[in-house]
Length: 176
Image (cartoon, rainbow, N blue to C red; front, side, top):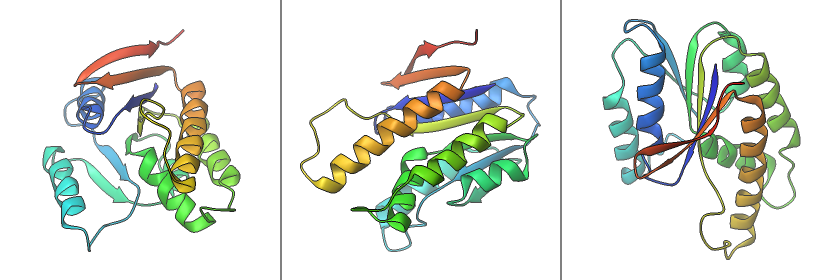
């Protein structure tokens, strides 16, 4: 089962995703937690966020900090995986490809291919866009546009999609 968990900042989407994958598996079954994005050594607040996330994870989970989520999904297609989150993956991808004129078409297609072929429990976490004002900068609008497209593509590949608001999950799509 592939699940996409959407929500705003501090909506509870990460905790909901962690609880969901734990409930879907046997209590001692390992989970690979893929954490894309920058390590943030120069940002104390970012390091605190990372620390809070790490402290919630069971000791038998493996954390992999990577920007190549597609390769990691292909590396262990039969292991349960939680990816948190696609917004930081997209940010890193735009950093590499170029915010003004770089294309994310190939990296998104590669990720979609890996998600589609994945053979075990997979939970993807992503921020939802479009619930606030249109960003005032070109980079902000680009990010919102690309993330909206990415979320739509992932939602089409996932059997289940939920939106988390104030810690409460609203089911958007259920398995057929």
